Image 1 (cartoon, one colour):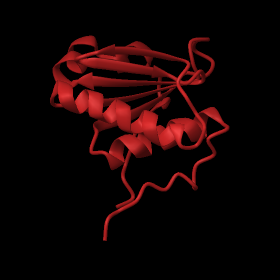
Image 2 (tube, one colour):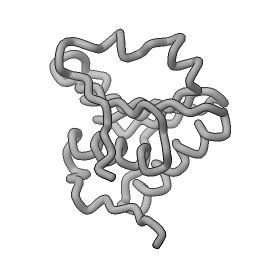
Image 3 (tube, helix red, strand yellow):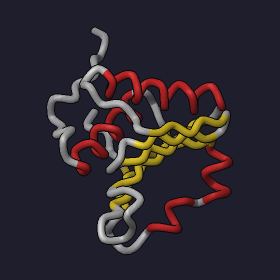
Image 4 (cartoon, one colour):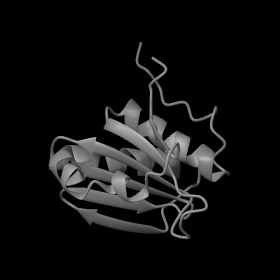
Length: 127
């Protein structure tokens, strides 16, 4: 049986619910090292970053496109897109998705800029 996307357990109207849903979608599509960073009380840029790695430029695009397509089905569209072969950012207002080519993520180490105790969490699949 083919596994289907199920976003019903996520409250897409809240920043934390949207961030969790994006992390779930990235994991569903086999994104690597899916991480959510809680930015509330740290910046006005967004409430959350969701970050994932991919091992090819094709996979970077595929992961970002998958998330965008699945959220579009619920009526959510990014307000801004930055697309590069090795880094895609989708801005959903309160949540910004970053999909990096693995080596680029290692170079920028974006998590290190925002980590502060317990505000970072790795997504753990329920499967």
